[in-house]
Length: 235
Image (cartoon, rainbow, N blue to C red; front, side):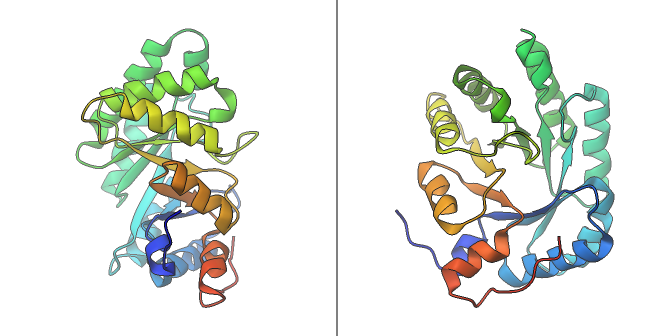
């Protein structure tokens, strides 16, 4: 398993606060922590994108948001509007939720078209597709990952954090194998949901995760740094 410095590991994190009750003050703490640690991004609900963009303006940390969240049951037009609006207000990546209900109804073509439409709406801004793997079979995870790779989706992502479970090693392995089956694919993997400690984080990365979405970023980096990153999280 690869060894990381705290700074190297922090760059793989989307430091996240997506609870409904999250306050402006907590977004301020989130952004401060992300800037101090040097994470890849902060992931917040869309209402907080203008604030996050302002607070992170002079840093390398990206403000990112979620659309069709957390159920994926919005119409395509709504998801596209959400994505465009968030980008206009400063979002630098978009994480969208797959239409899992349509997929499980046998309408995988509609779920796929939904993703493609949002990808188009994002333009040059990277798109991550959230699966909610707790609701999907291994075959469904493999199939959706494959067509995301075929359609040039930037990331596939395991979970919203609101499902019955979060990321698992099996999820990541299935995704990695499916991406590898698509010649020339550059699709990456984001593990999210229930990631609480360093051992779990490193195992997911070793299995193939390129990005980690977590609210426990500070405590995870603190495990690696031996206390240097310690600071009370405000969310």
